[in-house]
Length: 136
Image 1 (cartoon, rainbow, N blue to C red):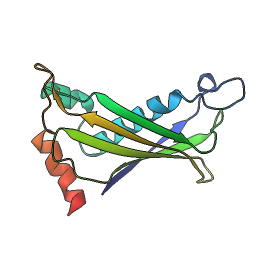
Image 2 (tube, helix red, strand yellow; image 1 turned 90 degrees about the vertical axis):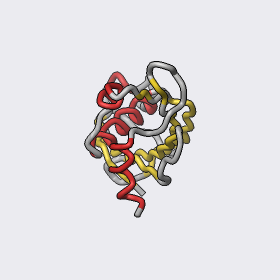
Image 3 (cartoon, rainbow, N blue to C red; image 1 turned 180 degrees about the vertical axis):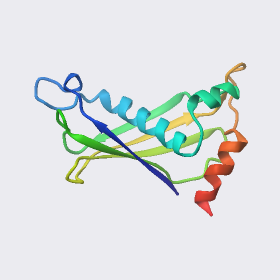
Image 4 (tube, rainbow, N blue to C red; image 1 turned 60 degrees about the vertical axis):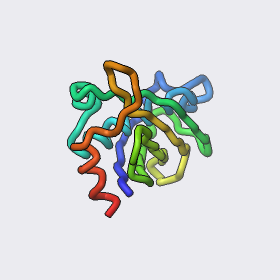
């Protein structure tokens, strides 16, 4: 299992009139945390695009448990529970506040796609080698 954590502070513009993080912002939090998790492995989305691989989101599931508020420092955990073996990668994400209370959980599925042909492909081998070490 691979796990990474990213911290994000809630900005005023991300909250609604009720002082609660607007639900649509969680997709951006999840994306930022996924990008940092991949960076922790020594790669970036930009690197993968240079290799001719893009990663569109095909599923996004979110469960809101408790609200986050302006100026909260959130910790977003990004977890790979399974080693990707084909064109699909599934990220599980958990959002915690500073009191370590679970606020939100999400599951995001992306496909590895050839940027030129838009056909499904597999994870770049160099990235797969890095991730495999977490599943031994």
